[in-house]
Amino acid sequence: MKQIKLLIPMLALCGIWSKSASGQEVPTLDIEHVVVIGFDGLSPDGLQNAATPTFDQLIQEGAYSMHARAVLPTSSSTNWASMIMGAGPEQHGITSNAWEPDNFTLPAVTQSEEFIFPTIFQLTHDQIASAEIGAIYHWGGFGRLFEKSAVDYDTSPETEDETAVLASSYIKTKRPKLTFIHFDHVDHAGHEYGHGTPHYYESVEKSDKLLKEVMNAIKTAGIADKTLVIVSADHGGLGKGHGGESLQEIEIPFIVWGKGVKKNHKIIHPVYQYDNAATVAFALGLKIPYAWIGKPVLSAFEGYEIEDDYMLLEQLKEPVIFPKSDGYKKAGGLFTESTSVEIKNINEEGTIRYTLDGSLPTKTSNAYEKVISLTQNTVVKSAMFTNEKISSPVAEAYFRIRPKDLKKPVKYEIFYEDQLSFLPALGSKKPNLTGNIFEITSDEIKDKIRSNTVVRFTTQIRVDQEKSFRFYVRSDDGSQLFLDNELVVDNDGDHGVRTKDGSITLKPGLHTLKVLWFNGGGDGWLDVFVEEGEMVKQILTHPLLIAD
Image (cartoon, rainbow, N blue to C red; front, side, top):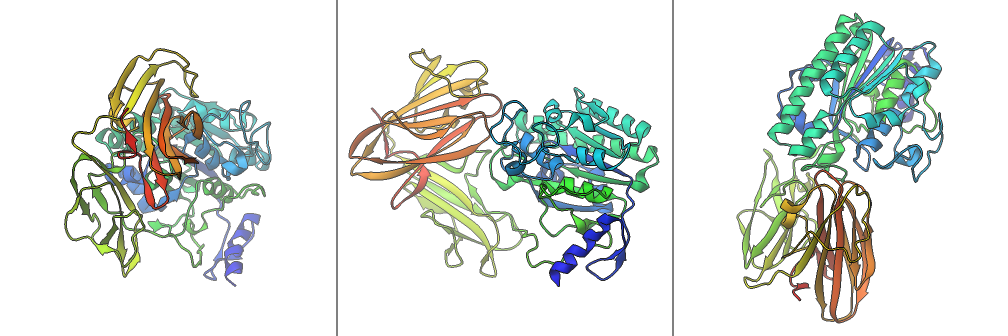
């Protein structure tokens, strides 16, 4: 019976009357215009901490979720494609920002134009006669993601202000069936200043003003009572980047306003990036291709209810372990001889439980009561518990304790190059800078890193008996890890922060470990982890690392 209830509202797509899950009769939506407004890099945190009266008004007058999810990787091309294609990268093949119609790895499962998976623009063009369709996008890269022949107005302004002006003028003069508007300035602020910074919040407040300008254009055009507006984003961010798998990067806002939409309605089931296009198709009465995996967000509309046993899980915020994380830098740090750990609950409820052996906390783990003293390398994991159940993501911190007289065991060599998208062959090239640091990380040399920088790290590790090790390299952009000149981890290429790993068995003695890493542009990052047998996964550090 539950399946029948979920399917019944879909009959409205065929233009007939049907009964909703609540038993009420509901008509077709009678929506004549759809405007999709996307803000690159806009996170729920941005809307919650910046002054955004226009966003707030749309939320009060419409339906919303602050826990919609982007697709992986959390890069722009992949997510803008998913937003307009109703499918994920596994279907449309746009797996990174390096994708081009004439340079890709994974072909789309189907095509509307050569190499292009069918978008909402093509569906609207094919199924609604003489439909006016426009795309106004601040980031020029968006223009390679859709079928040019399906769009009547196609322009890429140089600034966010010009984007708002052109989009508003287009709406007022053409009253288009479908308008897609893309703003890029929030992402710029995230990369330059960092997500969660005052400058980032200022860019979100600028977005609010631009949104108001577009909304005023819709009202001036006299189409507000027949228009559906969807506001969303491609990804969030962490530190000065994105591309990883954290909640900060993958959660995005999703706001629906206008004709037929519930008022001040919190969407309590999961919403995915590719549901955006499916919701547009539903609003315009379009037939959705079988190749699409997106579903219309039906519960946002009057007369539609979703009954399901697996609604959205809203968790408490994870505990904060001090010293806390900073961007991609993990919580914890490198300390001399000893340190202490403080854990803070930033929620109004719940109990903090923690472990010191790298295992996941359970209801029987120690409850945090006071500061913890450490004298050895320790991986701390902590989570919030309510009613003896875990109710937050797990926070983790990596504490490394070094002897006071330890010599810096890692040699670094820095090379300033041009136009990097992969690690170059360094050969016998002379480095621009050299020095020694305690660990293999970009953090200790961050003031020396700029765009198109390559770093070669070299050190030795001591093995007491034959063991199998697994190494993890986490980087933005590409990296490779070698042991005794054997490639163990290959994480090369132009990409956001991602982790790759590899295993190797080492005999007793000294072994030369080398890591190559490059930063093509923006905010780069590198760190290296290791695990072996009973040794929990930890940042690679002393005593495994030794000086020459």
